[in-house]
Structures are given as C-alpha cells and as structure tokens.
Image 1 (cartoon, rainbow, N blue to C red):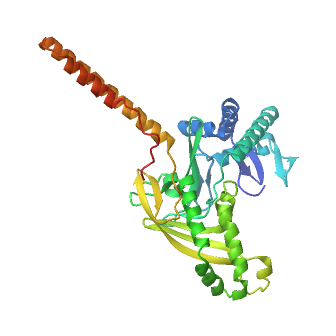
Image 2 (image 1 turned 30 degrees about the vertical axis):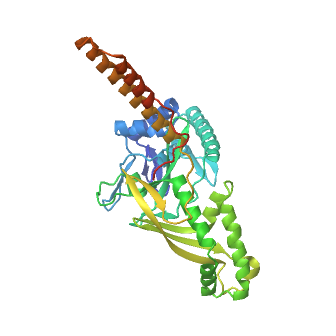
Length: 371
C-alpha cells in the first residue's frame, strides 16, 4: 500500500496491519459519534479527553500529526471504508487485503447519520443570507476576513471577522476586525452606486484600457443597470459579488477595486480586457466597540437609517424604569416626612403627583439611532 497509514493501522511490508492501541481509539470515535450525532460535539469531547490524531514519524525523524482533530479530519475518518476492510477508488468501494476494525453494521449506520446531517445543513444553508464579500475582504495587515455568524434566540447575526481573531492569535499588535456583515454590505453597495454614477471617472477608466470613445455609452448603460441591481433587495448581494474584486479595510477608509463587465459586442478585440478595472478609496469613519467595528461612510451616498425599533424599546424601558424609581423615592421621602412631622400639606401631595406625571409622560413616537 502507498501513502500514509490511517488511524488504527500501520504499514508493514506494503500491507496494512492493525495497531491495537489506535484501533481502540478508532472504535471509541465511532461509538462517540453514534451517541452524540454531531461532529462538532464529537470534536469537543475528544479535545476535552486529549484524544489526538495519529502521530507519524518519518525516516528522517520528522514528526507529524499527534494534534487535536479538526472537524474535516473527523468527517473523513468516519466515512473512510478502510476501517471495515475495504478501499475506496474513484468513488467505488472494493475489498481490501487488511483486517477490519469497525463492524460493518456500525459503519453503515454512521454513514446514514452523516448523510442525514449533510442534507439538513444544506437546507439550512440555502435559507441563510449569502456572504457576497467572502474571499474578497482584507484588513489593514493583509489578512482575509472570513464570514461568521452568531445566533441569539431565533435571530442570526452575520459578521466578517479577521482570520487572526478566528485563530485566536495572542499577538496584541494584531487586533483584527469584526464588522457586522449587513452594515458593511449596505455601505459598500451605496459607495459602489456612487462610483458607477460618476460617468467622467468611468470614461477615464475605460479609455485607460484602450476602449474607444464611441463605446462609452454601452459602458454607461451597464453601470446604470448594475446600480439598479445594487438598490434591489433581491439582486443586491449577487450584484455586489459580481462587481467587487477586492476590498481592503483601513482605519481611515476602504480601498475598493471593482470590475465592471464590458458587453460582449464591445469586447470583440482580444487586446481589450473583458472588464473595466476601477479603484477608489472610500472615506469612512471607524468606530470600535471591543473587537467589533462600526463603519460610517463619509458621503451623501450613505444608506439612510430609519427608526431603530430595538433601540426605541430599550430607551422606552429605561425611561419607565427611571420614572418608577423616582416615584418610589418621592413616596419614601413623603412617608419619612409624614412620620417626622405631622405637618404634611396638600401642596406636598400635589407636588408628588406632578412629579409622577412628569416622569411617566408618553415617549416620542420615533427615536433614530445615533452613530
């Protein structure tokens, strides 16, 4: 047998032979997955118990493996037919010349669980909003930002997070970025719309790649259509993914590189690229809240903010709580004054009721978020 031996086996004279200690580890992994039904939970359990991948030592003494399992490695391990005495070749399974470690019934049951979980993940993924900037977003030190999310109750919050934050780097100089995805995508969409509406800049970019002046109306038409798509709730994500080539986040702004497609009829000359490259610096204000960032675009193209209903509810709740506290304090003070002195007049009661009405008066209809 060529290649490296999988967990549970060693190679002896080009044949796989069972490694008893690793075979028990492999059986334990299969048993745990059958009980937990989740690769994520399986990984957490193995990490907690210190069960690591196969340690390999090359002839030159180099060591590899012996590290915590990744989820991908566990998926591969659980679906590898070598553990039941078979080998896989071009998608087909064939009998091998080595002994099985896992019972066939258990292995097939695990495959059924893996397939069912894969179908559920695919259905859920189709319902989740896409991340049009995936693979195109970079921070100020050149690290890519990876799509991530958090779930609170029934709501799902999307983010773009610097890779070093996901990896958990301990370098204090690399703070990284954690930007709310919808806010960043809206800001970029507004900025790109503004760029596409600047016809003189589009003309200069098209002529810089050798496009004739009589071809500019077709370019302007494509830019206008792309701008309309960016303003559509249905097509905005797809349009942004098609137009954005690269975005670099900086403390003072965003370097945005676009690729505006040239109509096929206008790009018959092979010497002319099929896209018009456009690069702009979008000035933005960056406000940090812990590791999370808030971006405020410094132009008239920024998306308008409506009433923030969650913020409205929080402020209203705080006002009510403050009013109740003030009423209770006034009532306590009134009681103390009544005990210490019998001269409590009706004017005192009127002042107390006036204070209560003042603190419990209705709130304004709308409160806009302050950025």
